[in-house]
Image 1 (cartoon, one colour):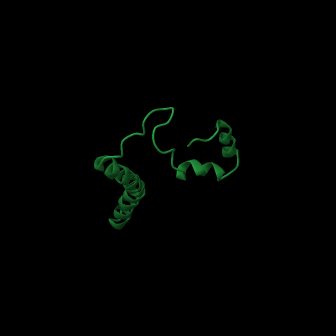
Image 2 (spheres, rainbow, N blue to C red; image 1 turned 180 degrees about the horizontal axis):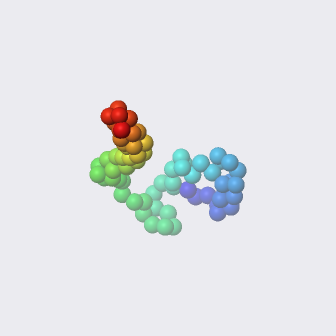
Image 3 (tube, rainbow, N blue to C red; image 1 turned 90 degrees about the horizontal axis):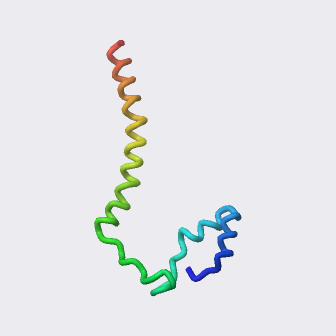
Length: 77
């Protein structure tokens, strides 16, 4: 990002540290080498799929025991 290392101290201030999430890096080659290649379609699909699977997993962890309890109570047992 072409910033000084002292800007890390901004992370002490709540929510100001989120700037590193949204700010783009420096354009072109820097002291760490050339920029990485752009993401492939597979990486983009996986990046969109993982949060969906995470939410579905949480919902299943809540819904399946509730459904088992419901069918047990509906059967009278």
